Length: 482
Ligand SMILES: NC(=O)c1ccc[n+]([C@@H]2O[C@H](COP(=O)([O-])OP(=O)(O)OC[C@H]3O[C@@H](n4cnc5c(N)ncnc54)[C@H](O)[C@@H]3O)[C@@H](O)[C@H]2O)c1
Ligand SMILES: [Zn+2]
Image 1 (tube, rainbow, N blue to C red):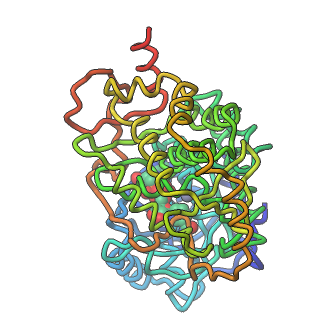
Image 2: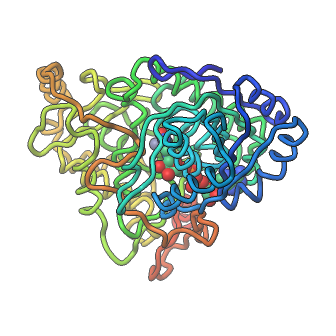
Image 3: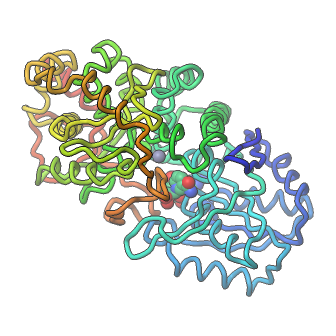
């Protein structure tokens, strides 16, 4: 397919067991050699097959391997990459080809933009997330600095993107769920084929059961969503803000100390907060909320939450600094949120799809999400016995008039064409101030997300953080209520 980002376009080839065909596409570009970029995992899992194929097709290459963690997505790694390129004999005619996830794609992508003021970049994403999000549908290349995420960077579109989904078969569950989380969000936002995709994937199979062919289709569907909106809104300032659905609470959770989840799973968990709010504001009915939340439950997102303290206030503080601020005029006591009416139909109070939500309601949404995923302490379990029961409880504790969407709609209408200048840069993955705090505590020695025991026993002593998923909590709930 051809990916469009405004006026920029580039071809993306997606195949399963199509490495020879994908590699031969390189010949559409004039080059002398290929500078391959790996991390230690892709060097191990992907390099042998790729390099054998390059050799078979007579393509000259050399390579460099960087570290796997966010802490290694730095200027120092970039410096090593630039040195390896120059010492290895790279020239103005050399292609830079990152083979890896978003970390490798962004760091080598930045090197490509700097070397000789811009070398041809060919992305070969090897994580499912990067294949439909970071590498294949973005021209943003960046590294982290001083604990700030993606702050040193530039725009460079790839000349070509090659996706071999056979490479996804060595990914762990967390990496697959990271990609599936963004697709779960697309299902809620766009419905249609995006919803069908979730019915055929997470609603029918565990992530690790998905075949290379299914992941190929899923990659294509995810890319088509990006293409659909980014061609009209390359800077993600109006309609492409819809890709931020679920990100407000999800991102705030990700950035909270002691919380550990993949980006995509955090987004899916954030969707539960958004539907809580939409339901309370009478934008989304109970039945529509149940259908919406069913998408998230099917993903069974995992998150490790601290058990020694209540993080609600910290998450709320981060929500209040979310990067959706600045599109609408500030309103005291409110945060802007993207909300859905139902699966496939978004609430649209203005061009930015942003609704003013009272901070008190946001706080309750965070409490709800945190309690839903917290270790299954008896009180939390009881409040989750059924969403319907929780909804009844929530309604009894809400004054509808103070949260009426009609009043908020009227207000938003009055302010939507006020000419408020949106922030100059905006990305779902590049953090606004305050910056992301990079953590290594949640990573294992390969830089992968640690996964604690998936199940959670009610009444178990909660002395250390545990990974709790929506499904495991429901299992625990069933056991307690049985
Ligand atoms: N430029 C953008 O627009 C954009 C968009 C989204 C994300 N990002 C960036 O992407 C990064 C996250 O990317 P990601 O989710 O791909 O994570 P990642 O690059 O950290 O990769 C996740 C893990 O998977 C491993 N891995 C990669 N391919 C593998 C394979 N085939 N088999 C086994 N293991 C493999 C990696 O070594 C790593 O441990 C973040 O730094 C984020 O800022 C950028
Ligand atoms: Zn995202």
